[in-house]
Amino acid sequence: MFLFAFFRAFFHSSLAPAVEIGGIRPPKGIGVLNPWGIPFLNTLILLSSGAAVTWAHHAILAGKERQAVYALVATVSLALVFTGFQGMEYSQAPFTVSDGIHGPTFFSATGFHGFHVIIGTLFPIICGIRQYSGHLTKEHHVGFEAAAWYWHSVDV
Image 1 (cartoon, rainbow, N blue to C red):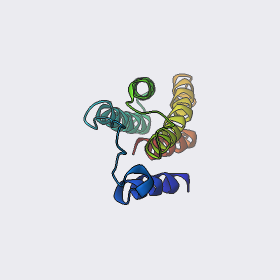
Image 2 (image 1 turned 30 degrees about the vertical axis):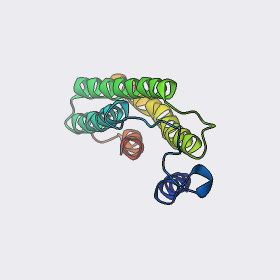
Image 3 (image 1 turned 135 degrees about the vertical axis):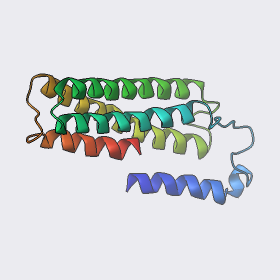
């Protein structure tokens, strides 16, 4: 429901800007982020992390324990890079949370997603430790599957 509310607020303020903000989107005097900069890079990073977790899954199914650990390390590394870039994006944003509807909508939606990425980063860390310890096998890896499903919901 939160995701729907964020998209609804974004699309409403984009497609039918209120008269109170000048009837234009973004409101006059508020800068916008270049979508081909950090946002695009972060999209590629998250999609790559999804490929890495899929690599880990295939490695577990093939019984390649070491490869699965490497893939999970790659997943966690990409998640941490994403989080760092999101923090950098926040610090360099040409608007603030108090800039009309644009700022709060942006920071709420991306912050909500970033929070899920941070929480989701814990799952591949735990799975990597379990894989390294020999707890995950091709017959017994339900915890990994749940973590992978969660991660794919975050990386899309």
